[in-house]
Amino acid sequence: MEYFGLILEFIFLGIGIYFYLFSIGKIKSKDPKAQQKAESFRKSNYRWLRLLSLALMALMSLEIILHVQSLIST
Image (cartoon, rainbow, N blue to C red; front, side):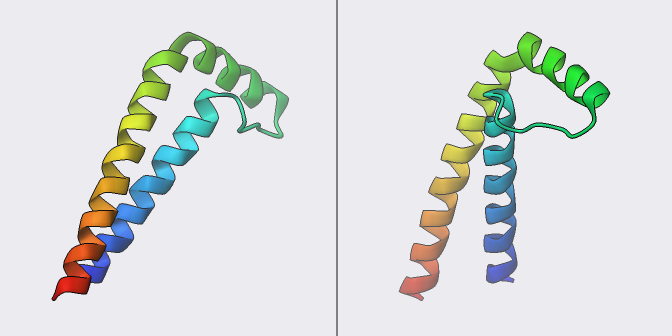
């Protein structure tokens, strides 16, 4: 069960990284219509999306470090 929690923390860290890359415009879609919609969403919401993704990455990184330390110490 401990390893399942660690896997979930890595998944949430990956989600945070994905949202950060999306907020800075590194994630592109192959469909031009979807790309246009994503670009307009990104331009109108980039500040809070970037801040929330950075907070999620920081929190999950801290959780992973603490989780690995607890696994090593037991």
